[in-house]
Length: 305
Image (cartoon, rainbow, N blue to C red; front, side):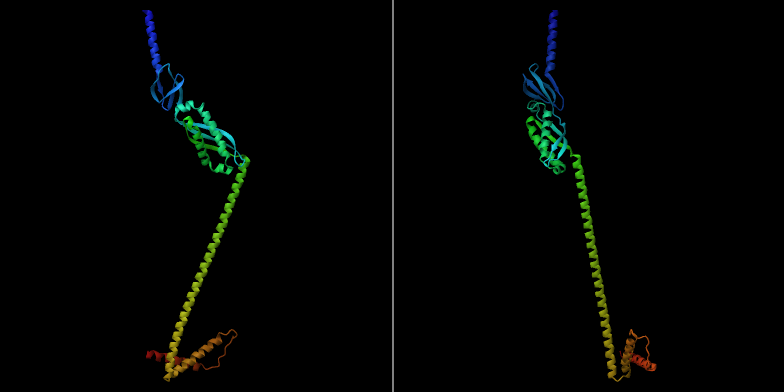
């Protein structure tokens, strides 16, 4: 009886252990591969799962979350024989646990070596100037090549980024001098362009000033001509009136013409540059009488009109 009890307890314990071995809990973000007699059988998803004890066993525990790998710095020779140092980072995610577990040994090391090799290939096919200015192009080319190569491994490479590109110190100094020369050249070009625009604007201003001055002279000449025309019309009208008066036998009209000629002669004598003193041996009464005759003529013309 006592031996039977021990046997029963052993059987019960074995049953408990067997049940415990057949129950598997898979964490979130993980997948387990199951091997039956050493051969891949199926993949367990996150949660509670059952497998056959003593026949099935867990083969590989694969993380399905996105993983980051640092690519160490390495020396790269560009197409124009410049030596640069470059490092980067790779983001990848396992999408097929069975392939990632059984198609390649040491998955992370394989991805790392593949990336480093393609970094040398892609960057070595470019000139230094392209290397420094087309980093996005380098990243996209690396991503395309590495992702295509890792697809049979059940892996999706989501991103590859080149972190640093370090040219030699002497090359950096040369590039700095070249950049300084380019900036000075652009500054001189801008200064010359500014001087050119200033000269153009100054010339335009002088042109407009001359145009306005010419317009002013034209307007003044037009006004002078108009004034002379009106003066001539007035003179013609006065002459016509005086001529009518003479035709009617008015003596004052004759005195008007005599006085006008007399005054004009005096004006020419007085305005001469070589004359300093003017002697007029003439009778003042005659001039006054002529002026009085002009007044009488004017009064008579006004009374008629």
